[in-house]
Every structure is written in C-alpha cells, then in structure tokens.
Length: 238
Image (cartoon, rainbow, N blue to C red):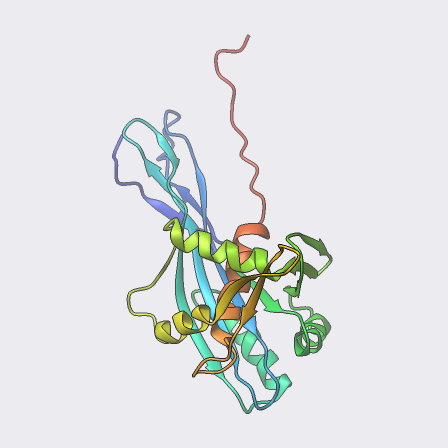
C-alpha cells in the first residue's frame, strides 16, 4: 500500500482517502474546518476576528490507514472600527462564505453586550452561529445558539492548547504581535475566598479585542466541535 495517500477534500470539510476500489484499504474520514471567532466592539471600539484552521487527516502509519494527529493553527486575523453593526454582520457573513472557509466554517462570537444585538441580526438572516456569554465560575452550558461559559475556563483552555503545542500561529500571520499583547493583558488573581479569577488590563492596542476573538474560537474548537461517529466492520465474529 502506498504511504502517500490521495486525499479527497469534500465541500463540507470532510476529507477521505481514495481506496482505488481495493477492499484491503480502509476508507478513513478526517476533516478540515475553520473556527471564526469574533469580538464585537461599540462604534468607537475595535471589532476583531481570528480564524483557527482545525484539521485531522487520514495518514498511512506504515501498516494501515488511520487518522493522523489533530492540528490547529491561527491562520487569519483582522480588526476594524468605525463601521455600523449592519456592516459588521455583512462582513462576518462574507468571511464565513469566502474561500477557503465557505461550507466548512463555524462562526463563534462573543455574545456579551453588543454581541447579543449582532447575534440577533445573524439569527434574523438565518446565519448559523454560536454566541458565547462569558460568566464566572468554571462551567459552561449551551442552550440553542447561546453558550454560557466561564471566562476563566476559556482562557485556561487557550493557554493549555498553546502549551501542549496543539495550537500554533501560522508563520506569516499578520497581527500576531497584537494578539500576543492582547493575551498578555489577562492575568490570574486569587480572591480573599481563595477563588481564581481572570482580570484584564488595557494594553497599548486597546481592550484585547483580538485576544477575545481567539479565545472564543479556541473554545469553540475544543468544546463545540461536531461529534463524529466512526462506523467500523467487526472482523473475526461468528
């Protein structure tokens, strides 16, 4: 069996290996999907978008076809201000449908404050998305398009993904330094009751807009990803 697989990329983000009609070659389904995370600002504040490419592809391990390691990479970042909420919604829709994201992207927005308004506008246009409302504590729960999630949990999730090498920056990513500065503005403090809380200081580039966009995208990729069901044929059973 050749070690270099011919991979077929489907429009919906599924990736399968060509078997050449050989019954000895298992067909394995992987994926490529994009997580578009957005932080929405007031009219004088920045709105920001970060996109994570999330993929796990079929590989040949020397004896058979299996799923390879899952890789997540920050591949896109942008920030803007001075535009109407209608324009922000239009921008998110165009971005979600643009190549290479179209058909295989998930839109996740910060649903607190003005994010609720943008979520309603997206909902009115039948645009699938998830709106994350940051809360205290350490838990998260989903109800329809709304997700209540602990801010501490979300930031810790991003830190763990970076520390484990499960999330990296594209080498040529614009605004990387600003994203890192935004993330550096978050600090952990211990309250008098012994609870860990996240605080944020204003940095030179603003309110951490790009950092929040990346935080919600990473949370979506870890906790809100579609569940795949693998169907296999049992052998040796009589």
